[in-house]
Length: 292
Image (cartoon, rainbow, N blue to C red; front, side, top):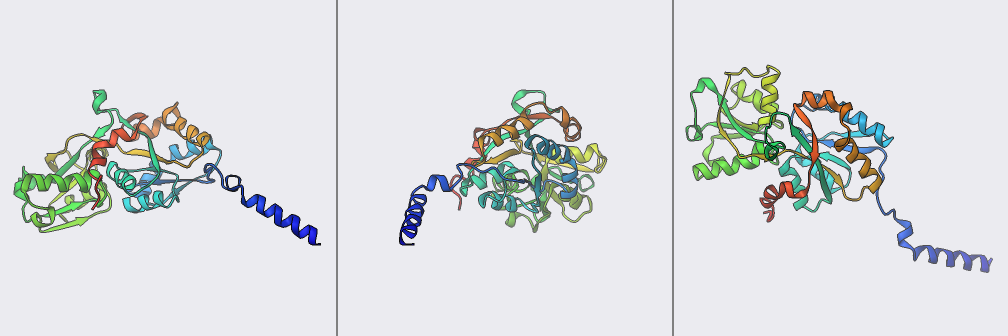
């Protein structure tokens, strides 16, 4: 018995001395956990992305679990805690996640069919909109009004608008406007200004264009009074610990033959996907280089 115990002790000691064998070198999650940030109504967004989800499941031979993300912060926390493997983020939420230490890599983004030059094929704008009947045509006329933003971590719905307000008025947004509210998504912000719940809103041009195409906004209903410089389209990101073989298959779904996604891309008014890297978001990341 003593010899047996000695052998067991020796065996345990040898196993303990081999930590590399005890931990996997990479992650191969089943199911793959996919988070979508709330650019629009979550239920409608999920339906719209079903072709992509089905194609991922087919290529990866596993279920893809869509993780609810009621806010940009939820997706960021999921990436930090490694409870999300694949995510579509806004440029600012990507920058925030990286500044907080998230180990993620952008690999793809949408390319719009509405852009004529390669330089702007993967960009959109932040728009400041008011009801046309108000007769307002510049930001200076909105002092003391109510403003609708989307989410504190939204690039076009909060981050860049706050900078524009401070730059053009010399005042922070909270001091310039009587009240600021957050809607949670761009489509809800559009509805808020339509219904007169707020006097003005900042939204993404891509969502506003879609609302016009779908007839949710009449062509002469809202007035554009400010537009940002081009913003790079939203990055799709992957956790760095995912196994290389899995990453290669995911990249192939986005950047390979997208014929199975033709219907989805047409609905989104996108030409397809193009490669993305951290360099595409360098200017946005610089805003968060020294987080407060």
